[in-house]
Image 1 (tube, rainbow, N blue to C red):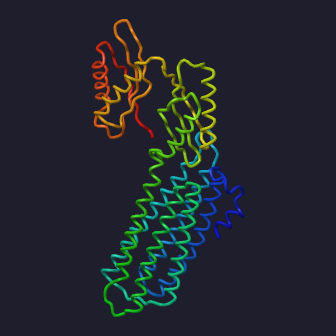
Image 2: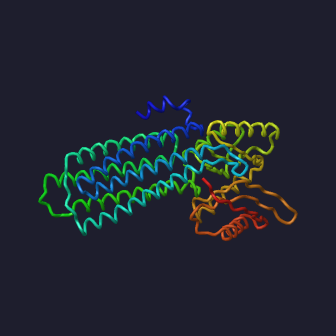
Image 3: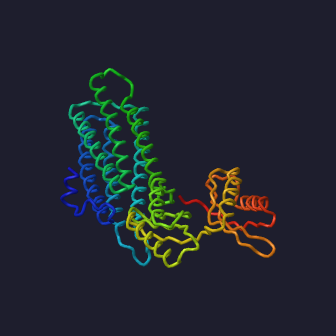
Length: 391
């Protein structure tokens, strides 16, 4: 049904990297979520009042907050699609992550309230009247919620939306929660002699399940706001594309800034032979920049780093330094190595990429590099810059 509505109401629906198209996906799915959740909430509230079940009433309240969450998601998509302005030159794409975070906190709030009311139901159980009306409403709710999970997960993956994935996880949690409530209602209906407060116990199970989903949703929306390490597969695609432009021989200092879905900024250093024509090399770099921007729908900046390909000592020294530094941490890498002769000593200039979790501080790593170079040749002196890995 939603796929049909997508084809009817969203022009160029295949252009999912376009911010306007993404916004339309989010708005359409948000409206569908509001309508379905309001209907489910009303039906469950009626069933809960008729049966006197605290877990059914709590489930109805859960659907009402889901409708509010869908409103938040809808507003987030609408605001995040705004064009860049003077105060926000990188656009408003991260508002989508913020809306997803709000949804996650709503999920946590619902789980807390549901847990509290369920514990009260266990301590002071009330009689539950299990009717077929309640059973039918809950069964329909399970189907509806699983359908909501399916389309939110599908389109969240299609447009790479953290907030829609958060809504999908919430819907999946609701499916399991309502199934537990339905199981309790059926047991109560067919085994009325059971004195265990199953209604309250089911509510506690539902609350814990929803809480776990909420924590996961918080993580998935906070990570892009804080800035997380890029997907290695995505990094490999960038590297392969840039290296396809000869004579580029290597890349380093790759940085990927995420200002919201479809709003990436990529910068990197490309290694080129230092003895080639600079104008031809500049043209190659320009072509590589354009290719990266076109392929990944981003803004791309490539810095050109000349490499001395004629000095035969450089690869030997590089391998020696790499071997020695790997004794500290095998993830350490080096780049931009140059040998600069002087009258009294020779400078060996290079960058060290200090991996996350390295037990050597920057100062210790520099000191170790100096020792490594002087052990190689007494009149060699290390000039080292420490980089942090961003991918």
